[in-house]
Length: 292
Image (cartoon, rainbow, N blue to C red):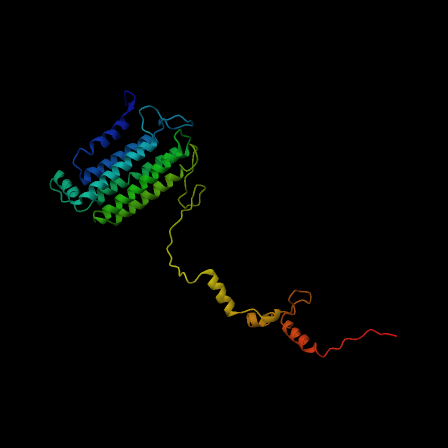
């Protein structure tokens, strides 16, 4: 249904974003609004009549929000709910109890799970559009997914710190975050070329390796030069160009004799030969040429 060229789902998303700051913020209302915004965006992105589909360099139809704009709207809505929680969590909860008479809200697991369960559907729509030919550039959408993933994780952390959600909600958050990470792979190519999707096992053609931070403590006194010096102290070089024997190095003699022409075949006896030659040099008398 269109009204003067503006799609109805676009009007719904815009209306939620404009009215939400005016209405008194409360936990249940914010989570329901988030679910509505996410489902509307997933429908717009995944519909076969999306004007962003098919190859080209023209922007989507006039009056229709692009994929990056839809992602930004979701991110802004999540940050708005997080702001209400961080500024005054007591008022955020009390407003819910006042709006819903007779309720004494101590946990947001159920409404939170309903909201977070809508994100995998959004990720599926993003993957389908990203893997097909589309008109929008990949980079803004790739960045938009990254910002959305960060907002989802931050909002989950704030709720968990306030003891409003628990382990089951955390598991759903991890699943939703992973689905967004998989969707981001479909928008990694240059310009607006179709991307690929990472397989669940991570072994597909679209899989990417992610660097993880590893912390370690290093002793500045143990650098490479010191290690080399210590190794030299443990086994200093032989004087006068002599060699270590096989037994000195390995504590045993070789299992089989070396071939005569093998380099180092007589290393075990090299030192003895050098010492014998040096001792017998003084007693050697050279023959003089015969003269008539």
